[in-house]
Length: 184
Image: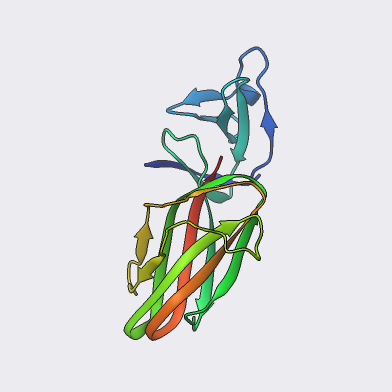
């Protein structure tokens, strides 16, 4: 179960408390996140020295998993009328990240199926490493495929992350994939 709050300042500041005090009078609550009287929220991002990162104020929604102290982020890609030979860049990460979940769902009919894999590497022209060796087959048009077991989920800094498809059958009008991750 995560803690949710609204955010008006996005990922704004990082600070080290003076004399062991939390930033701006914040008090550590529950796990590793804090709340100040001015409605900003902070998470503890390091232990020695203790550093808090401001993550929220009051208009967008972010979630920090309870007890993890890690903000989960995500990137998504939607491919219309996918083929069995897609090779599409999703994003570039200048920081090391760890994938925690990948969710895929199809829009289609007549027993739609797509085999896909997420690859990563510092050289986009190379083969890259597969997050799940051999890829994943998605046939769901309702709840999707939820992938949480990986062969290589740790991605080094300055890496490209991309999608490749290797098979398609049935009528598939859309493939949607969301990659959820934390920064290392």
